[in-house]
Amino acid sequence: MAMQVTNPKRPEHMRAFNPDRDMIWAMPRLMRRVFHSMGELSDQKLIEMLEKRLIGVEVYGYPHADVMGEAAKEVARMFNLMQQFPEKAEEHAKEYERMWEEHEFCMPLIACLLMDAIFAELPTWFDQVRPKSKLAPIPDVEEIERAANEFLARGDQG
Image (cartoon, rainbow, N blue to C red; front, side, top):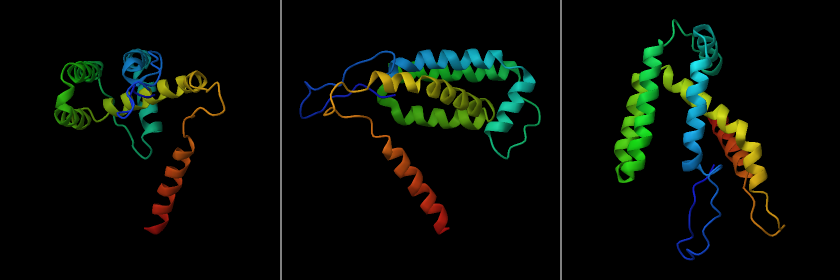
């Protein structure tokens, strides 16, 4: 997922726009899939998913449907506010943190389901950005491996 950006030195070189893949345009579709998935989960499946995804956490009980619905409404409202008032990035970040504190089970569930939706679409996105020329730039996926190795190296030091 990426955002459509321009090179400030050469604004005519705007990256090709793709509403199916670009982050801002893909998010509504992805979040629709997340909320649909949330609605499909039984209480027991929800508990199992949270315990499986949140390693080492035992879930005693589950967020009731009304709590999950409230979290979903707040996430949707946050997206609307970010679109309407992008200049208030700091306030949006604080609201996001508040939602994680207030909805301690719902937000990790939403995050997991969103990553599931993203990973499900990644092969298609990679195919869409496959360059036609060997000289064209390609996504630097090696950067992910470098970052993982740096993370592992830091763990060895402590």
